[in-house]
Image (cartoon, rainbow, N blue to C red; front, side, top):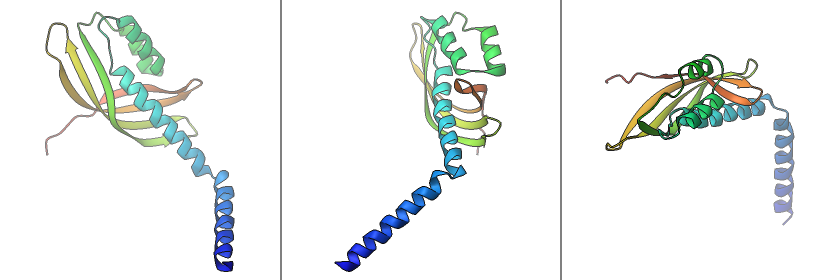
Length: 154
């Protein structure tokens, strides 16, 4: 009984010390920032891979909300046009490949599944690999660049 109590107290002391040590640890802040960039990147890549052909203006607003810098400027300039095909993108996997927490920039790679529904045609599914550059803004992480990663044959 005494041994169990001593072991419990030792474990509690070690756990408390570990918590206090990690509370101010810079790796915790870095991990939090990485997770925030990843979450925002996944959401925004899905948003930029989605278009309701019946509501292109709403899609453009969503794209502009998800972007910043050169990508934002390009989307504003080109707009959504008059699409005849709807697309619904979902990120199936993603990872942060670079993070500079001080400058507020990150890069990530993602695989995206896009369901395409042409007007009057059969729906298809396309898979894409994308690389994204993100920038931390006053309203959170935003995409500043998005490009396809070429698939090479083995």
